[in-house]
Image (cartoon, rainbow over all chains, first blue to last red):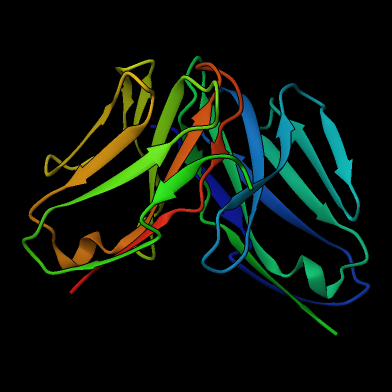
Amino acid sequence: ELKVEQNPLFLSMQEGKNYTIYCNYSTTSDRLYWYRQDPGKSLESLFVLLSNGAVKQEGRLMASLDTKARLSTLHITAAVHDLSATYFCAVAGTGANNLFFGTGTRLTVIP
Amino acid sequence: DSGVTQTPKHLITATGQRVTLRCSPRSGDLSVYWYQQSLDQGLQFLIQYYNGEERAKGNILERFSAQQFPDLHSELNLSSLELGDSALYFCASSPFENTEAFFGQGTRLTVV
């Protein structure tokens, strides 16, 4: 079974600072997703990464994928309070669409 | 709003009981997925249907079953409920089997 490791589990950062969340997965995959979840809410899709070297940016968030290292990163630039949430990476098995999720990173941005 | 509708939003029931969770996929989506989110297990894939047929099975207990109907809505049936079944159950849908899936708001099940 595909294993997805995400770290850190908890991240407390000051507004204006930069930080990176890491996502490692165990076997080859077609696609990697990043999601945001606010407490008790649904999963909001942030990025879909499909190929080696893919980089996507939206606002203060940038995601990248290295399929050879089986590693994706979610970089946060100049954090603001509104970014406080739990972030999940999820990996689809090759030829499949069911997702294997990481443990999530609970991000708290402190003023 | 993703367009995926789940009902009910909240459900409280007793141990040993049976419940049915319902999911209406986005218009035109043929594939439906069920996921369970709990504090113990995190987010886990349960089962996938595509155009009425079961396509993939994950860590779904034998006490749980699902189906997708001709109108493409899906139901997840949970029986002989235990305290540990308390979780947030998400449904997601996608147009085809290998396209991005979008998640519903979830059904929070509490077993007391």
